[in-house]
Image 1 (cartoon, helix red, strand yellow):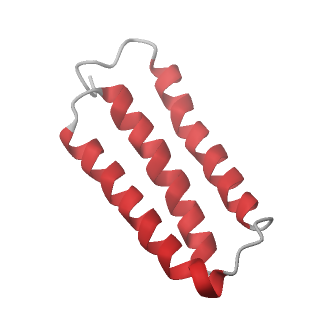
Image 2 (cartoon, rainbow, N blue to C red):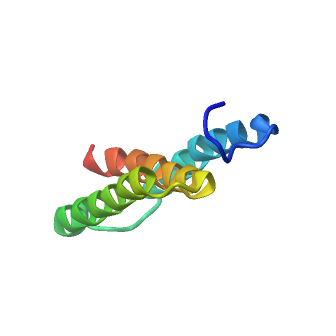
Length: 88
């Protein structure tokens, strides 16, 4: 068993991982349509999203609820893809 709270319906958990790919792709795609001066707001956005990533990783490490861990991973992955898009 991977985790004590994982039920026998493992495909439902695996579909959460696919969700993070979709939300990350949507976030990265949405950046292209934002009318933001990245020269002005880029550093603040990078700092803010880095804090969101740090909180998500901290929650994944400390919380024992598997659903919170999966939700934190989705937030982490989507924010990371958004962050990489902004940085380029």
